[in-house]
Length: 294
Length: 327
Image (tube, rainbow over the protein chains, first blue to last red):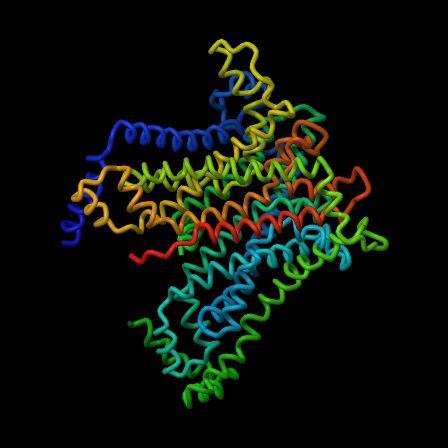
């Protein structure tokens, strides 16, 4: 039933612009698909190069890997110590994102559900942090953490990531909680659930999707974060992936470019993101775009 | 529905064991105590988030303002110097270059990217396969900018891919892509490539909210493509444009990684000063380890970026302000 109703409107929608369409439109479509293809090809190309040795990469950059040898990966993994960096990155990204969401979700819930001037101002206060460029707090954070011996420490980095993520996560989740029907809580209250119980047993299950989105967005941003990690971490055993990658690139200027190893390093950075995106793609782009449109 | 039933029966049992029982009773008694009791929840609910935010974000921001008025090498005594860090910055050619570069990224990359993103949105709006195209162009936004810096380094190497491709075309004497003066334009190009897809997705979300009957009305009234754009699409997506402009302002001022790795791969680790942005200036002044760290000057430069963001965001909001069109 619904299908037979929907199809004609769809057709109509698609046909309308075409009637006013022109050569320009066709050119636009071609260019757009070229751009899309370029993105896909670029990604595949990077993955392919990671399986080739530096000399063949340089002599024929468009060549296909002759064999699927993991030599670059093992070198990057062992010699350049991407293993430690990957482990550090995974643990920091996971721990800090879990804690960020665990702290921000109740706050966002409370702020979005209890209308008062104080709460409105508090929400605004959280959101204002979105406008502060990270370089502003870089030096004070370094000095503060140094005082308590938390520089060059993954615990310190975790704490910093949690603090820095509060504005965005609270912003995203207040918007999300606001979109949930208030009747749910009223019903829970009538049934005698305490407000805390309502949050844990009624709202959290309903808000699962939004909270998962917030979590994964933080996971990605902490996985990629570079400036703070570069400032706060000094020894190689504490490096996260971006810092390890930078130091790898900088070594190349002395020891000659090991492009094979470098491409393997890039893959270690990109592929987990690709996996997460394939898993949750639409949710992520909606989380990063719909919230903005409101 | 069937899910709700067990939850109800579990509820009293559960709260009976915990301290929740008296609370729950109060809640049933009157609406007034419900509100009071909810207020009590403020501290456990909002407190921890607020604490982290205050200690690790707000206090450092305040401290940055304070440090920027001092001369300080990171350890040892601080000397109050008033505004002299700021006046010194505006006499420093390096800083002026960095600020100029940041403005170039903000304005030039911003404008080019918006034009491209909007054009792509118009094409994507009713294209076959739009969903898959949209998902693909969004993905680059999730990847660390470092990756693009490294790749660009490979592409534009003297023996790199671009020159290899140019050779059959008869270009035997290609430009020195990675010469210090050419680096920044390359960075701008790479950034445009990286960010256009993301902003296209945001604009798409705005354009998608326009109900199709507006287009049908247009077709009926005989509007051409330009009129449709001018009188339907632009007014109805204006607020999304405003949001994008604010978003780009905020994120362009903190651009760091790509510059760092772009230049860092071609020299001593610190990128050539022609490519510095405000964020690179702050980091390099404080942590390069080459000279005595000047924390005062470094934070002052960061505070100037903050001021830049604040002024621009207020301006954008004022300029873009229109009556919101409900539809």
